[in-house]
Length: 228
Ligand code: ADP
Image (cartoon, rainbow, N blue to C red; front, top):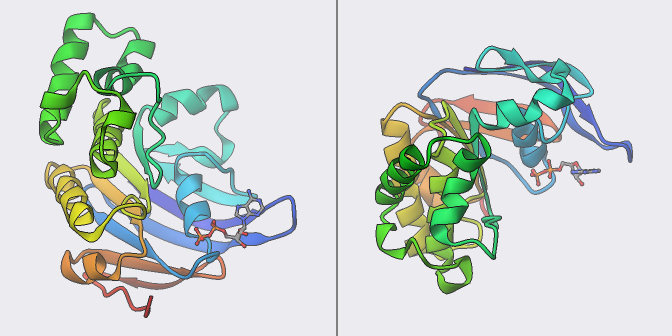
């Protein structure tokens, strides 16, 4: 599903954020990405949805090499990959419904199909009753649920999340994790950078640890392994 071969990333300021990364992630896996701040977790994740381009190496996602993908094809690949951020990134002037429907409207899906699909994903994140609200009228956890609904609207094979519980209290974080578990149970690959030790050590999945731009540990049902 996702494969990196000898991936290097040097930012314009000279920092090497990826220093020879190799990994294979199969369809349906759940992978936590852990490591200290500045280790290269976000860079690793951003390269998987072509937010950042590697300086060297191959990154294949669902059969497409993102390293030499033409810029004009980036919007196409973005529709195949769901992305969830720590700070939600919802459009503030749009309702819950409109935020989730947006990705289907740009591809000019039939309005009837849009409505059906939006209500389906809002049901999955348990937010059907708030479709007409604006993001500012929602709690942080609810906003994150909207952003998860938005990430899966196109039925992507993979959802990539960069510290999705980073801004949420512990109870809300568990609630958000239950949604990712559900998405993964339905067959979607999940790759999640996180600092949440308790979650990683309780909801056991594969753990990939990154330090200094390198994968230093890769364990099935691993532990968080750091003290923070
Ligand atoms: P993490 O997500 O583990 O905190 P990052 O991937 O964000 O790590 O950062 C890895 C390293 O790359 C850090 O030293 C960071 O300062 C640097 N870095 C990240 N993004 C950029 C950028 N856009 N330009 C220059 N340096 C960056």
